[in-house]
Image (tube, rainbow over all chains, first blue to last red; front, top):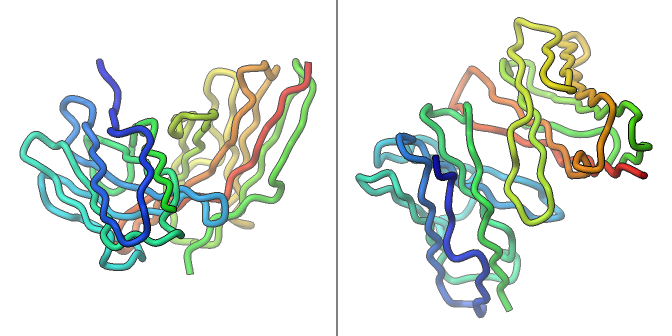
Length: 113
Length: 113
């Protein structure tokens, strides 16, 4: 069974631009959660989608948004990029909502210059 | 606020020795705890979990201990191998409120030959 895939793996953007990251969950998983990982803040929860509905959201500004499609694939978007948005963005999929039994993808490394 | 922290940021052990990684959590409402392993360039990988109605759970070469009285969690790895070198995170999910994974800061485990 294929694991969680994330595209692209690496991305370089300029301040003020916007970016869209993609996540394909494990087949049969309807929950997709997104996390931001930085050396200073560690792993922080961004949001979770389950069956195309946002179930939970972390403490991030409105510049961070996401969506989920009917095939459970998910995208997250960051608008008006700031230098502090440079991070590893991880997505995790699960059959269940709420953070249980999550399988993580390899992440997308975003660098904002 | 929510916080899950680790006592030591780095840990070095000799190959073949046992290692213990500690974690303190502050949310007494948490009822589910997970240990993740993250190798360089990869997303977190599930190691073992434990529910709050248990105080010990064993897996293959790993044991998780939970002390709810002092809100402490530990991961014991027996007979460490070079492949155990990674960053280890504890994470928790609280039953009450919006359920989500809250991660600790992580401990880097290095196995010396």
